Image (tube, rainbow, N blue to C red; front, top):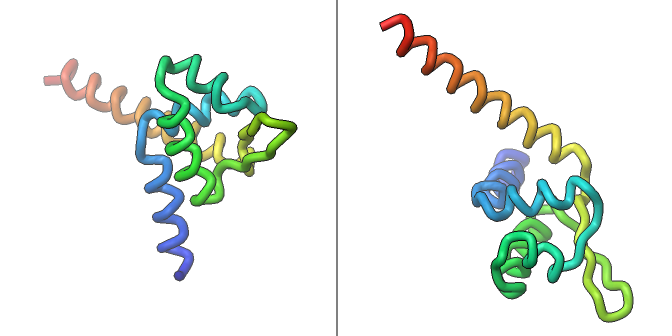
Amino acid sequence: MDECELIAEIFKALSHPTRLRILKILKNGKCNIAEIAEKFSISQSSVSQHLKILENAGVVSKVKEGNIVFCDLKYELILKLFDDAKQIVYEELKNAHEKINNA
C-alpha cells in the first residue's frame, strides 16, 4: 500500500458520525466500551464494531485492564484533523450565508 491508500483508510474510518462522536469522547481520556455505549444509548456490540474499524485504521488503541477493555486515542494528532475539518465546515457555512445575504 502506498501512503495515499493508507491515508484513505484513515479517512474511511473517520467517515461515520458515530466514530467521530467516539473520538470526541476519547478526547477527554480513555473509556471502556460500556461507558461509550451509555453516552450514545447504543449497544456495546455496535460500539465494539466502530472501535474495531478505528483500531484497524490506527486511530484508536485498546488496552485490557482486568476484565475491562479501555480505548484511547492512539495519536492526539487526530484531534487536529478533526478541528481542521470543523473549521472547513464553518467556513463553508459562512460563505453560503454570505452568498444568500448578497443575492
